[in-house]
Image (cartoon, rainbow, N blue to C red; front, side, top):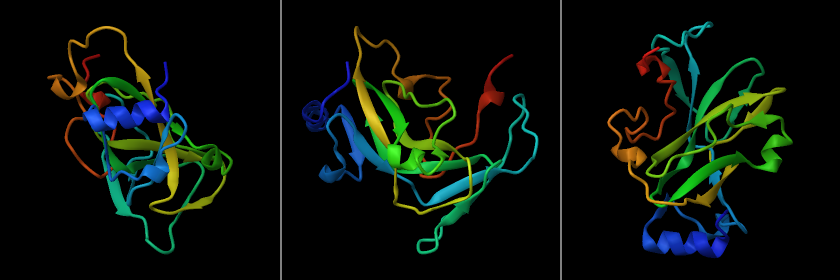
Length: 179
């Protein structure tokens, strides 16, 4: 089941959902709006290799001019908001206004885990050139209840690859898997 605005507020009061910075005006009927952070990144190599560490170049979005995203390039972005989720499963979805600009904010990683504590890395692609700005609404977090007890929270997993707190995009850590 999806949490309503009232339930999200109750979880925030209990400390089981943390959103920083928090703005009551961003709370919707059953979601919370998140914003594009100040950093974007692109991969250095034209061909990515799932078995090796693919390095990225990180840069700041100009506060006034924004940045024009180009089709055919995968951009890693980040949410302005740092979030923690200790009793629910967060899902990040794009806002319809963003989708109508031809912007996809995630390729496959829309679900967080119970215990995820960080900024969200966005996997941004566009269908045509579009100028984006830091601080613009980019997505919405939807929280689902879980049934049963959680044995291993994400932030306590020994092999969790995205636990280091950062306000910058994080590249794929697929290379840390054995295959």
